Length: 501
Image (tube, rainbow, N blue to C red; front, side, top):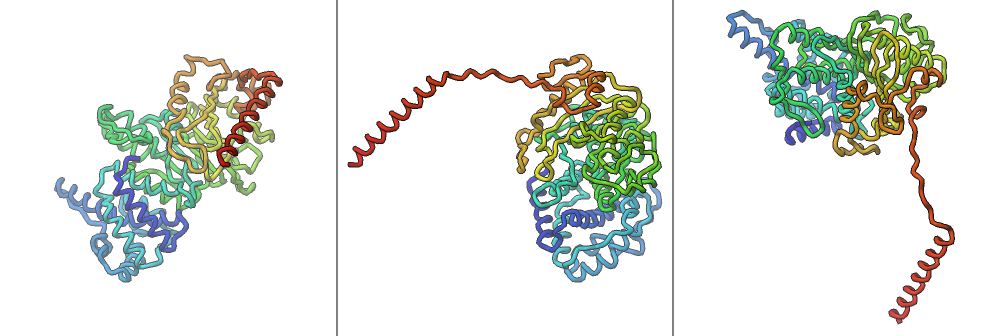
């Protein structure tokens, strides 16, 4: 991530302040930080709208009219005790009740929000650091990077890394699914909105002149201007009718919304909903679905949506079927699943694989090493890429050995790429290459063979392992060498004793 060291240092300091200030739950901390960032940006947005109205000779009513003391600039220099009382009892209530165009996006999900910063000194220190970051004055790239770096702290030791999918894995999946400007993209378990943000950046990259694009050492792209998008209607669609996210946790909704807005998506469509429950009604609506749904969850059987046909309470199975329903015919999905989905022997497991093979075109399976989600989960996982409609003729498999980071608990950066560029290249060329050698990293398996194996989709079922023949010396030769070595050791010991005398 390309972020100046001094900015990273300030964000690290902010985390340390929250940790030592009594907010040890990292999700709560980032939520409280998001409230403060919103307070900061609200005044900047209001000033921008005011200047724009003046330039166009239009009248503009400030969102702070009658509430001038809620401006960040008004209270940021208050003494600590006075600041806490003012922000908690006045400013926080103000941002919870905003009703003004796009500014309500964050406020509408704050009905049950609670201001939890406990100490005056912590609030004052946090406000000082955020003010020094000058978030609203930064360009879009840096705004997004600042929040992304805040989120990245969730994946460091002791900070609940289960909430985030590694960004390089998300980028790989977005590349494989290949979204475009006319797509409608959904994540039914959006978390921090990583898939939606990266899809937006991928689309912008496609429509940015190559000489303007910059890349950081970890594979992230910057300076994505979208200068080739010349019609306003396409920008409006990108900002208001392209990215849809759902989550059943309001905290995650607020975090994902802030993440998307700071990356430049002006009006993302995010909603508090359990997409597996009876209350969720959407079907056949999206052209792309990207997700890493919860692995080890379960749902009350009585609350499972009637449209879901698989008889199970396992969320990892229900979510994949939900994604099939969300897609339009011809729509494409990229989803991370635990390996058990590929070979589980229950009726529910088999039925899901039948749906993927007989009612969809299962394009590819990337088997990932178990260390990808360490240190928080050692489970082996795979990426499924499928298109809704038709049926599968053959499935492309890829056996990923490395993802660019060490596969131990430390997850140290090696090159940030590993097999990923090779996966993308071979996936795009798979029909021309038509690989059949099952000793290689990637190969095709015909549907007939998969059916014969009980719809088993685990790569280990089909990959051929080539064993190297090792030539061992005869036992008498080995014994002779050992005796010779023992004689040499004994000789050395005798010489040493002589020297000691």
